Image 1 (cartoon, rainbow, N blue to C red):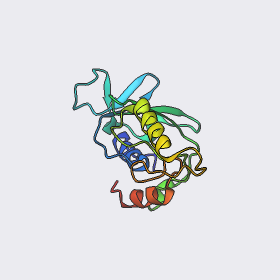
Image 2 (image 1 turned 60 degrees about the vertical axis):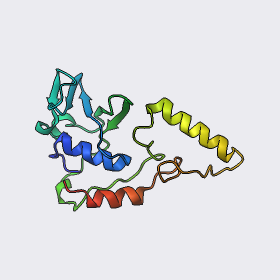
Image 3 (image 1 turned 180 degrees about the horizontal axis):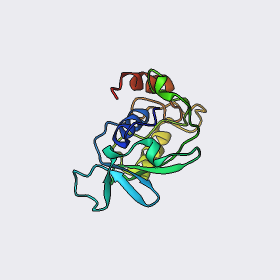
Length: 158
């Protein structure tokens, strides 16, 4: 993705990739600094995510940042800049290249709530089914649907 995207737009891309609806607050944490929406008085030390770009906070490969979504469920993600691609702005749209498992549904109660949902579904389906075919939020939680994510990313207006 282009390094000149601001962090608010980066958040919207992450929302699409994770299958969430952008219904909650978010923040990025880099070197103990918090970047998010300053319109809400949730944190006094929040720096406006609209004013910084990916390049500003991740200038080198292998740089790590933390992305937190939904301050109640508190979904915390570590994001690593794997590779800087010269002239990335020449690409027509953003592409999700890989991932593991489907993302939990939004507002499911955080990690503990999601684990409870999975345990309940496992009990209903039974562990004898090797493929563990069950649906959470319209998809198998064990499988990431890259084609679906990339269709949604292609439609995203950034």
